[in-house]
Length: 370
Image (cartoon, rainbow, N blue to C red):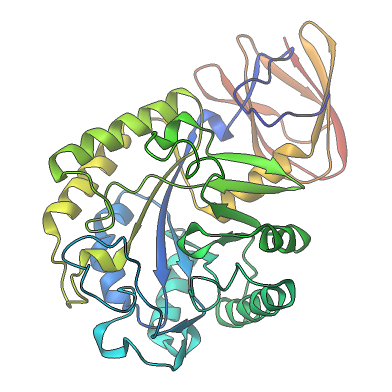
């Protein structure tokens, strides 16, 4: 049988296929990293998170513009700003384009953090214009191609996840991303129309679509200026949303923008109370069985997982085939999990969770509950 999209509901002979080692994915998503970003800003903001081993997925703007008009939805004290606040005051209104590869100090810092396992990088449009991925097909293709070229030239790898600027997308852009085999993050299509005020955790955080992953809008209660929640309630809201995801065995993503903590592009963190609550929340979820990961890593794992074909042979035995290599394929098993046809054995990773560390591509193997 084909592995279905509901990762929580795949009951077979071995009771349940699980996330790697039974750990629920936890992602920190930070948008708008560009030429203007200072590595000192990121270091001071994530000092505590990185000391705890968290991975931050930075959404990279390859070629940012300074003259993008700001949203009418901005809250005080940003509501008076004419141009996008993700651009510093000194460059607002400037028609010049700024490429991230010219910030050599930032690029070197990000590459080092990636090598150390502390950060992940996804593609966040080209110039962060509001309509750049809402236009005609040839323009979208050209912009995506340019963005991918700059990204690969700067960071020496191709991202497999695209984050739509402002969570705005067109069907044309989605089709082009699918053609390029790029998974993407966007607002769920039903949120604006029907469930505008509903909690995001009522809906799945992702789905498989055309051999890619569609990730949906993340929780953003720690954004100091871009949401309406009172500071005292943010921890409880985040805790509530996290527990819903965790109990559903669903991926949890916490989203914000680094520049919001440095009002209005000060050299030091101005929103210290918000950073304190954010770090307290990270300490809270530290007590759960979470997989600290980035978008690229979890996307690769999900795509490999979705390539598995499984057939139940008898009550305590099944045969699996996989097209793609997959690391940490895990099962919930009440007895001893035995594997035949692979060099790797299943090892007991936690409680009743058994894990095969490495499954190569294009193999058929048997798993049974001994």
